[in-house]
Length: 70
Image 1 (cartoon, rainbow, N blue to C red):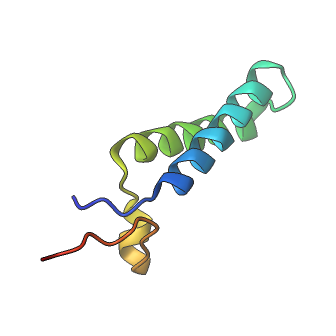
Image 2 (cartoon, rainbow, N blue to C red):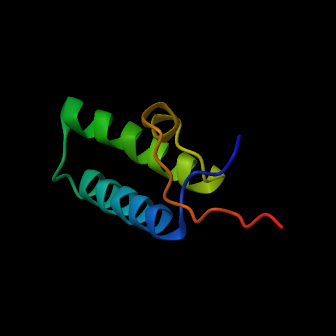
């Protein structure tokens, strides 16, 4: 897998995941919506850690800088 996520993208995903987890554990988000958002938060963290998003590949997106070839 080639990396297709930049640093800013990873930071945003981690922050969104932290907010979702905080809202879930404070009881603001409950039920099915809470479970779905917690799964989404887990996906955000996982994709941030491996710097690869499968959806970016499908849509041909990259947020990381291109490596220079010499």
